[in-house]
Length: 223
Image (tube, rainbow, N blue to C red):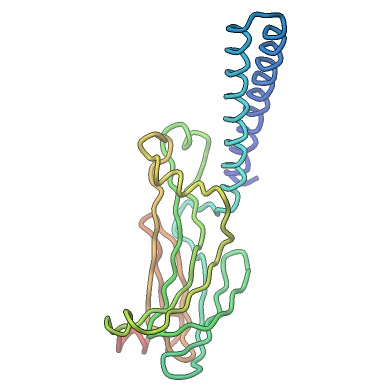
């Protein structure tokens, strides 16, 4: 069982308790309200509703966290290779750690891979939670600044969006979430070249890319 799965199982048990308490308060408040005890009835109903809404939000966050992948040390998160289709025009093939393959066409001189990272502290680390990451986007970029500003850009999303994102919550409300050490983005970029292959790893400091064949090493030598 993954560390995240174990933590989510514990959280699920706590959520069930929270829901039971919330339903009990709501039902008790409704009965008091129907008997004319308006203040105490409405107070209990409000408290129960708050607990139920809190449980619903916690479930949504837990489901969203499952879209992230845990890591405890530097590990390979993707491999990427390129085939030239024309000047500043490449076919890119990215394979992530789960084996999913993304193929797209990129324009420019360099490729860039972006990821979102969530780290923990406090009681979250006691639960055994590991740092989480999710690959976000693969895009092309131009070395020349003027061309970067004017030329066509290409990019492909590597994760499905949703109405709730735990990373965005951690980043926006980090002062109110003491168990989240950091919610930050990380990106890496290197030159594209025909036949070039790279491996991308994630360490505690962010993404790291390394050449995997001579074509990639030659591209970096003239970068």
